[in-house]
Length: 312
Length: 259
Ligand SMILES: Nc1ncnc2c1ncn2[C@@H]1O[C@H](COP(=O)(O)OP(=O)(O)OP(=O)(O)O)[C@@H](O)[C@H]1O
Ligand SMILES: [Mg+2]
Image (tube, rainbow over all chains, first blue to last red; front, side, top):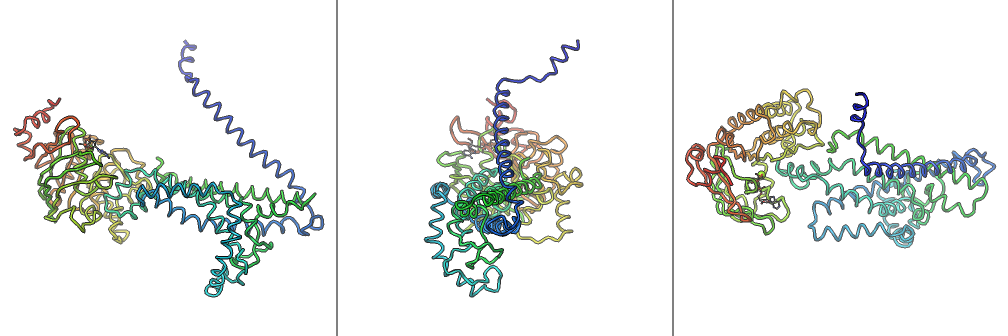
């Protein structure tokens, strides 16, 4: 009697389910162990540099004093880039998903996707050769007219290779991924909710603010975080564009700019040796931690609104 | 505030597909008009053409005239947004805004009209609309919960509350009770009776008893044949339509003898 109940209550497992569970578990393990491997490598190689005293390294500074301006520069550049890219991406994505006629929307979508395929060296070259010189007069103007704000205190850089220029390049680089994700999410807004808004007498814009944007909020946050991750870690374009000098300054248009961790590693690595390499790897560990923290924060933000997300 | 609707020779298309053909109907003010007919005959399509929701679908268009208080709904210079503010709608499937709370859902339309409500006024609007939709008792303690946390039937009543909170001149209801239990259904039917005093109401229903209970006149729609467009077969006072309709197809449908 007891044996029959046992066989009856045991859940039936289909072979397909088992295979699927196996594959997905393996993938998850591979990803987690890769991540752990990276973290272990960074820690093992970086700790000697992080604990070295000031006179042991070329920079002549303790690790904390060395890395602080870099952390600031990394976050600062990425945040400015995001501040530029987010509204533009949302606007372009909305245009494609809800405003443009279909014949126009598709080509625009393709062009944006193409932008994602351009290597970052190209963006870097464009930043140096074209953008910095053509944007420089704007910096002069900003200094003259908005110089009372700390961001535009000047003196305006003569080359235009400022952190703002780097951030603009970064913004353009993260635009495609952000736009693509936002567009997909906007297109997924249930027709029922859009119609609910329209039937109440919403204009197209009101319908977007009532039904589309709230529904897409968590997706927009995810898109922004992906973009932020890319902006934080972007190396070549920043290394090429920015003329950096290890300061902490919110001044966006002067010729003394903070560098970013990734760009600094790329620029300093070729002539580094011994403990100096270890210091650079230590900064890499800090970047890793920052990116991780950003993602955790993003998840927390999304989870807080889960109930009202439309996912239930 | 009494609004009548006169439709003449209305053809309704999805792209090139003619869904409803040649409808002539007059919908009187301060009365309930019921649309009945088999599934797919174009009741929803026609209903949506009465507040210009039809054209919200890509490629959808209409030909013909819809006069609301003598003014052509599809005339030049008429903004569909204004039309929809005057002619409210409850959809066949409940569609509360999932990102808004219950109270915000009720107020959504009021906010759109650019109205600045004080807290007390807003609370009063919410309570009154929810009471009339028969939902107040169930949700009064959780007005700040998401609209999507309600059951299907509760969501539908929330949508009804949302539609009547803006006090439209005309209320179009597409099978508002199809997801409701008999008690909620009778609350909604009572509401329809009450609203009839001021508003013009059109209701689509598959429930013959409901059509007989709530409506003053009944319109029977049917497909002209397989693959042919839907059309209005017969229109008349509800008692007559149910007692001795002119058209044999109407009689067959109402008595459930429908092939
Ligand atoms: N969005 C659409 N695009 C194309 N054709 C549509 C669309 N919606 C409805 N139709 C077609 O229009 C015709 C009428 O559909 P409609 O939804 O108006 O029927 P109905 O009478 O409301 O049916 P039901 O009682 O099942 O709700 C059907 O042939 C349907 O396939
Ligand atoms: Mg229908």
